[in-house]
Image 1 (tube, helix red, strand yellow):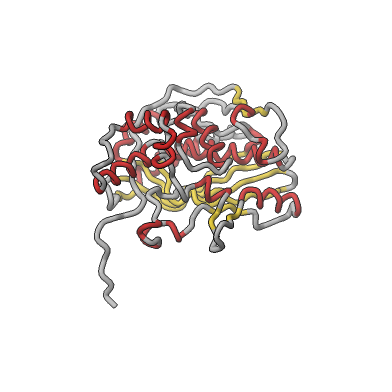
Image 2 (image 1 turned 120 degrees about the vertical axis):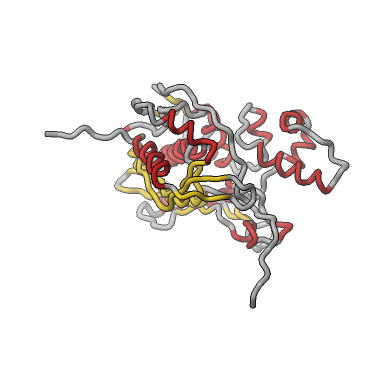
Length: 328
């Protein structure tokens, strides 16, 4: 007698249940924000059996596609997203602007809405204050090297490597550069944005392309549904470019957590039963990286429950409190 196969979305829902039951309480030292956390989990999605866009709440698909293209094309300025009415990256540049204003009183006090309006309509302001250097797009496509003016296009390299050697074990893209992160960095170089989904590897498995992501910090309610969809989409796009079939998206979680102000939202979501996953269709040619544009990705048969609103918590990143004195 065959047993009924579990819906793949239950991996996500079961992880939420486990955190609610067994997660340990942690406090972000920079903001005082409370999370409930587990360490070291994995989910796997067979992309031949549907696209893992969660159905127990509506996921912001336009944001997924536009953000992935933003990374994929090597961009670091939020103006591209703002101009397309995608506002998922607004908070960090605004945080940087507010911090700069505490030191430079010539900067005009702006609300977040006013700040974003200036990003949209003032190209010089956007050039100065819309930049988030040393984040995913730059690391993927323009990794800085010790040689002035030389960068490395990691994404193009992995495509070339898989074309040259279908059995390659080294097709890795890394976003974690210690030179720019946390107290490893010189103060003037330190990124104020915390790199979270920091490394992925792709592999040709008998004509199917699979991708494994290691994500060191995982906001289960708001971030992870987006991350699942983004890297699953990256997998199917790269498969198309490499003339392979989509295989698996494998998601390795480091610290996976629920923010204290998302607990009630999860209780609502856990009362919902997953629906069938949608599918992805491509329009137009896609044989090289530059062929990928958002208009070529068509999502079909997505039938989610309504969205569940929750506030984004801007936590993590460079800690600027007092440094401990060495005891040596």
